[in-house]
Image (tube, rainbow over all chains, first blue to last red; front, side, top):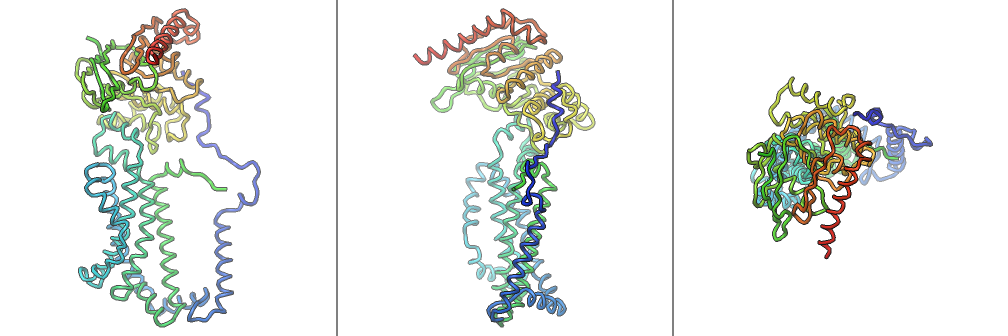
Length: 278
Length: 253
């Protein structure tokens, strides 16, 4: 009693626009590259006319980059910054995701603790840095704590809301087949929440970057943030831009890594939502 | 003793009585349809039998054992199939078996058997979003059948499908029933579906069963065309229509 015609339908039908114009045939990366090249060119062209105390331009930044690299300052600073960054961020993910899952799943925990997560997300945590210095000193620990505090809340809150967005009927499938609480959490809620968790991790990177730079401004002046503030204070604008751009590039790369991670752990998601923009 | 006994179940949400004393028995291998207008309590009754909701009072027994909560003696087919989007067809069918504690290689072998039963062998490795609505629901039926339940419970299983696919699945379900002789309870608001598939049709209204109408069409009902044109079919269809209509009129009065 099989309906064969139904099965023979191809799994994925490629939808092509009926008329392929140049806006759809040029690969996205080509367009991005051209855009970046034009923007850099304009900056170089107009930036050269600006007083070097007030502004700078790409080739000067590149020159500063290589001289700092040769002196070894950049490498040292990168190591100083990345250690507390990674420690704080990883801790935020390891604690934030499970806490978010539990808040979303259990009403009692949500009503008892949800308020603190919401409040923590809305609090200007940077304002607490002076106090944190008193608690944790001026070194590695305080930087890691600031990064942790800033990235924990977006990760946790996204996971929490992700669990709330899991359709009730999907959880009922587990209930109807007598899945245990653990099996429902691991086999239904966690995979269904992955897109939200990934969005939280992505937002967390942005917050963690702000956290590490501010922490380095306000604590022992060290790391990439330290270079930014000492160069700015001595009006070496091109030198100041080197860590700024380096941090930006690293943050973009990390965000892309999270996107890649999502495709790897949740391949069905991009298949479902895989819509090409025109 | 009937295979499934529903004894005077009630369900109240605050002051609203969704179910107001529903009782019926189902013999082993019988197919019963619960039909009625929206809000008559048919889905609530099914969900109580499944253990997804608890009755305010009354009892449900499957093969003599009182039911509380979920159980592998009952298999549920959901209205919109509700397949897990990250699982392919085979492992969606195997979901209930996994929860039952079955291990490989028996797990895959059993799931494969039910995959063949619903005729989806070629769609074995696809994920739900690559399946049509009808195929999804066949996976949903296979998933429920795979745990080999005493009773198969179906909540408007074909309601969301277009009429052609729906009829195809009616034929499919009739042939599955002819092979497995499962006891089936399904909720519907489709007269033709009720008459075509069921041995008895329970007409519900305002939380009560107003009538139970037996359908005396011989099984296996594999020739759907002959059934549709039979006198019994049109007689019972009219009878159910009247039962639904009468209930509606008395409610409006």
